[in-house]
Length: 239
Image 1 (cartoon, one colour):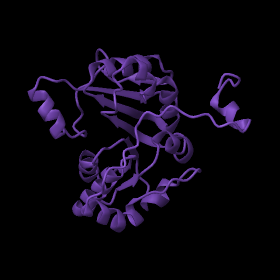
Image 2 (cartoon, helix red, strand yellow):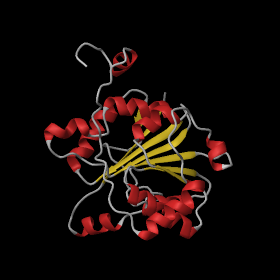
Image 3 (cartoon, one colour):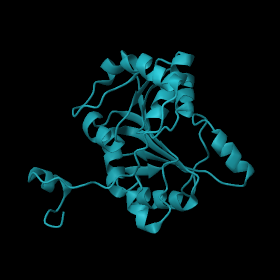
Image 4 (cartoon, helix red, strand yellow):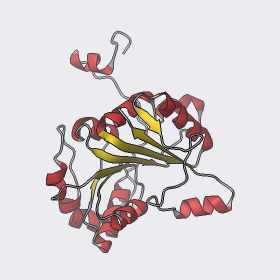
């Protein structure tokens, strides 16, 4: 990259530069139920990656505000959110195939129709598939904190990512982050407070109380009993 000023310049010159990934691809082993769910529900609830913007109205068969969650894990909280907010359309993006299968299985069992899932790199999806100014909310819950200092560059919340998210949010749309690692919460706040076109929705300080729409997970309950904290940050696009 040294002789190029940006990734775009390198690509224009026909040079491929390996990108730093914020995630580790974990294939895992599918259970029979996850495999069946992928086979049964992917045709109606799965979105294949493409290099051009999607039409949300076509994808969901209706027009409604769109919420995207990056890294939904096994998908239980995402399915719960979609089930409890039928007035919204939800898209979950996850690179862990068993998690995608588990999410589809739960959504199918509950008859959730306002949820679609993707199995792809979320940054590429945002850049290429999500129309500018189209999102009601983007959710990033408990991303890998990459604890070691030399790995901080792998954290997904970086200035470039904050700007990418801003372009995809509608004016008034929100970027909601949550983490159980306080140093990462502080890191997120530093990045977001310096980002242009955002306003922190916290009444004071950088953090907000967990909104009712974000379900509390078993992981959080266990952590609270051990005295661990969780920090929620919500920033609104203002420009």
